[in-house]
Image 1 (cartoon, rainbow over the protein chains, first blue to last red):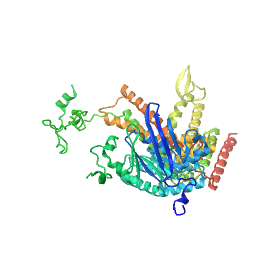
Image 2 (cartoon, rainbow over the protein chains, first blue to last red):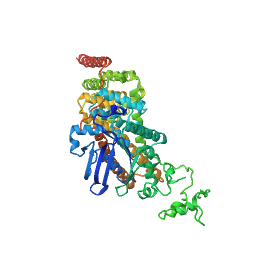
Image 3 (cartoon, chains in turn yellow, cyan):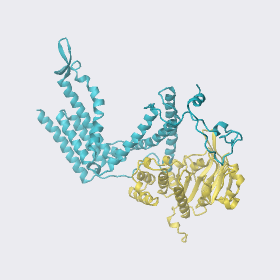
Image 4 (cartoon, rainbow over the protein chains, first blue to last red):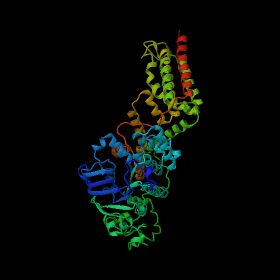
Amino acid sequence: MAADPQAEHRHPESAAPGDPVLVCTDLHHSYLDRFVALDGVDLTVRSGERLALLGANGSGKSTLLKVLNGLVFPSSGTFTAFGESITQDTLEDEQMNTSFRSRVGFVFQNSDAQVFSPTVRDELAFGPLQLGLSRAEAADRVADILRLLEIPDLADRAPFQLSGGQKKRVAIGTVLVMNPDVLLFDEPTAGLDPRTGEWLTGLIQELAASGKTIVLATHDLDSLDRLADRCLVFSEEHRIVADGPPLDILGQRQLLLDVNLTHARTRLAAAAPVIGNP
Amino acid sequence: MTVTDRTADHCAAPPATAADPSSTRIAGAPGVTEPTSPATPAWLLSREVALCPCGCIGKRRKGSFVQKTLNGGADLLRQVMFSDDTSSQPGLLQRLDARVKLVVLLGLVIVGALLRSIPGQLVLYAAALVLAVCSALPLGFFVKRVWLFVPIFTGIVLIPATLSVVIPGDVVVTLWHWDGQPEGLTRQGLTSAALVVSRVATSISLVVLLTLTTPWTKLLGSLRSLGVPRMFVLVVGMAYRYLFLLLGSVTDMYQARRSRSVGAENHDKASRRFVAATAGALLGKSMVLSEEVHQAMVSRGYRGDVRVLDQPRVRWIDVRFAILMAVFGAALLITEQWVGR
């Protein structure tokens, strides 16, 4: 382990690279007991992995991410994180809650939901203070994150004064400031201009290179090979129908057509070498 | 007369422009593109005949409720931006700790409530003006903001109290005679009305001073110093934050209606139904949003108790200001008592 440059930065109880960190078994979930969102989903996320969840709108990707963050609890099936069962009951335990929340961070698709404090500085400090960091330590981390995201001039701005891209940066900052082992992103590049989207793709690559585990739901097939090294494909029946490396998945054109991830007229830049698109 | 007739009679349709070379044309039907989906109706792919040619005929109608709502939303944002600007510029009150400022200005409002003479109120009002000047606030705007509304809301309420038929007194302005006795405005009534108006104006001036020189977030935080529960402050802060998001949704909905409206918009049944539908849609949106916001808070460790970063400290300038204002308030009250004897 002494040779691992990331070892000294890792959480004391962090899993070694390749160890299962999030495990779901036969997950079923329905909203209002009527609208099925997950129908028998099995999933294992390993430490240091970059996993992309692919699927059409309403296929269950966002629900699965919320299950992985302990925000939605499945109707049946089990979910364990870092070897511990995650249920509504276990998250009532203060120590368990703090441990889980500090190790799994979630960037929502709707940044407006995530940026709720009066100012950007308060927003960034919310998580660390909730998890028990001192004010001085939280303030230091906030300053570091403001510099990292290149938004120190936004520190005292109110959320309604921010553009969509700036809100997304702040939303990502609110999670990074807690330094979680596992980062969940719901449609991270959706609705962003090309420059911000490219910046975010680079950031996700950098975080993954530092040993973070990344799970993201995306429609962005063009950047898929840069965002993930494994993909799970959801069918419109809310089941996982394929699991493999991005280029393998992108090469299965019929699969992508069947799950409504692409259209007969769609041209995929990332898949061009594989499926022979011009 | 149908729209088609009217168009044919009075409004010449614009000539068809050159077709898009990439689109598929239907043989024998100029301007009509072949449907790409069987569900696409043919009329959607043909050019619509304009209802009327562009150009003004001089007939105008103004003041639709849609336009007023849009203007109201824009005005609110403009006011908030203006308050943000004034609270960040260099000035006396802007340099002070928000908690000290809140307590001091609230104390001066109480002094104003205890003063029983018009000269006393005028001295306090003059002090408010001096503070406004020292805080680099535009004096004309500051005075107008107070005096535009005080006479309307307070003056109208006080008019009956100035009449001799309501409260007897020495009539100074005779309006009519009743049973040989002059009736009209009384000296006592006018004095009382002037006292109340000056008291209201002074109090509002002090509150406007506070809001124009303090960022909303710090003002909200300073409520904690008055013992307001943290949870209450958090909820108010979030309500204020999402007000702008929902205001944006309302503006979008009204703009969408406006873009599809032809002719003048009336205050009729359809308009009321639209307002009700807007309110319903907004309620639905805010409920979905509140659920997501709660999840976002829980995701970052929220368990019912909130900790905040800001721990403002009271400095020497705050203490000096508080002492100065306390001495001023006390001197004003004592002087009034002394002169009154």
